[in-house]
Length: 452
Figure 1 (cartoon, rainbow, N blue to C red):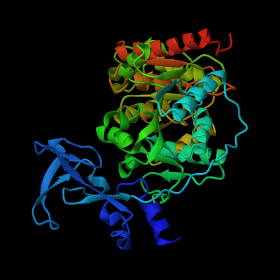
Figure 2 (cartoon, rainbow, N blue to C red):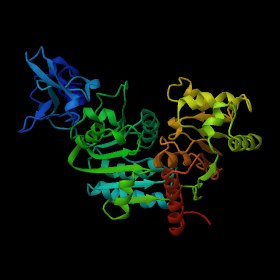
Figure 3 (cartoon, rainbow, N blue to C red):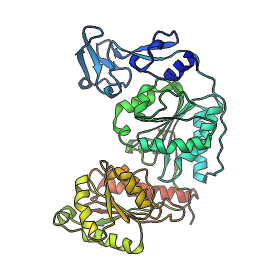
Figure 4 (tube, one colour):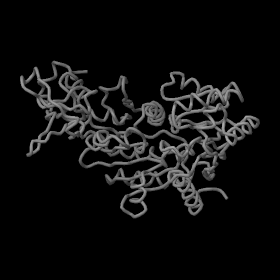
């Protein structure tokens, strides 16, 4: 590989700091340079990499490069310091011509998936914005295949971005298998693909801070998930890494209330998939009042309704997840549950054995996992039932509760199951979560997407 090809692989579509590129390439005429910090007419600073303009996240330091007090951005400093005397380096030369890459997939789409797939193809062909509002377990990845193939045929670069590393690790082999002649770039903290220029990039939203006007098609998966949903710099990164004339597709099972209103009022271009591929209705959450459950647990007992719920499923051999608000409650509840069955385990974000425990549950060696919201997404256990203890806690938003309910009934072999919200008072989030599931089931029936 010659120097130009190496430089293009490093910089194509990127915005990197000087220290992030090889020294011998810095003075190349094929490099574009942008200021790291911009100032408006009133002297207000904004980071050109992450879009941060918050005074509290912009500071001055005595700079050894320009020998003055230099403004720098604290919001994205974990990716290297951007200051007013540093530049962002990119590629200004020609990009390699993309060749059509055929899709090699023998699967078939459900009726709902096909409708959404056609809309995705249309959005990509016409550089439109589209929200795909698909229920948990609807098969969002498969409906993207045809659109991505159409994009490649048009010479377009595609990016699939998601807030979570584990989703990147899951999607990469799936996309690689259906586009086997393509080398997919997989980007996350610590990955080895950072200098790979590929027609298809699968990345965490954090890594998009390194890109600038790189992609013709931007697909954002789990747009409602933390931290993307609450971090302005990640939302800026998505927009900044798109080309000016490009397509933007959002995927989610739980759009925000604002987005739902925009969809229903006609202000947002969207398509729904209200049913899963196996054509069965979504399990509707049940509400189970259990009084001051925290007081009961602090006295060393399980709430009687929850205990009965667990014992019934242990007898039936039904795997279970029990969600609780915090790690502290996990620690209090686990020994009480192990008095019923010592095989019961717990998981949370700081649990280093989390993946091993999830695998053991898939192998049916663990009958129940008591967990925080860490398992609200990205896990599938056939035949699962789910309970939420303390569903009135504000950690359980409408989005979280819909995602938790979406763990149940995902398998074609066992498309049914029970979801129970055990509470000490109903909340608006609980009511809205249930209403959203009911609404999707109603729409699926009306469109003939579920079997009677």
